Length: 274
Image (tube, rainbow, N blue to C red; front, side, top):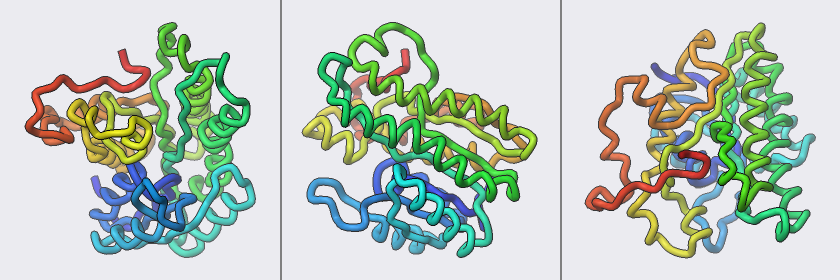
């Protein structure tokens, strides 16, 4: 189970889970395309495409940092073409970029809903479509960072606009797995069982206090690695949870993934997980 020599195109990889997936693959000697908007440092969020590229190369991988707005069709297509030219192809697309606003229909601004729809649902369609010619050649992977389709009413009651855009990603996973099966392409979704401690979550919540209930992004990176290193559609068409896929790989101890290993507080389950 190695990604050595494989080329991964990861959106939103300048920080958080996307960065962690990039670094995990880099340890195998993979080629990583860091496709994100953050070319310049953010005043409150660490990481840029260039800082992650340096980290990838320090771990033994090869990196290509590309400033990409996943809403822009031409930019996306050009970035994929450049990545394929530099590394000789593309083996996996990781649709990690995301936008969130936990607000109901009554109060959501249309421009905010448009942003979530464009970055969450539409970008998965666009990036997957644009990557398809390269993935056909490799029989590769598409991995979407989106949840199981949990239809319990509580996930719609307070923030259905966000729910709709994330579930749209998961429905595209199910559809593309069937649509692309003749090309040997595996398509899956991955979602965390618990809150993941990232700078973006800290920024949303205003502090790290809740991180005592969280795991580190490493668990998502290890889960993504297990999926992306599988072959011949052995894993496809599934809306997976990080803990679930790792248990299938024989992992039974998850204590080392806790953000605060000394905390005895219960972990907080993530959105859409009962």
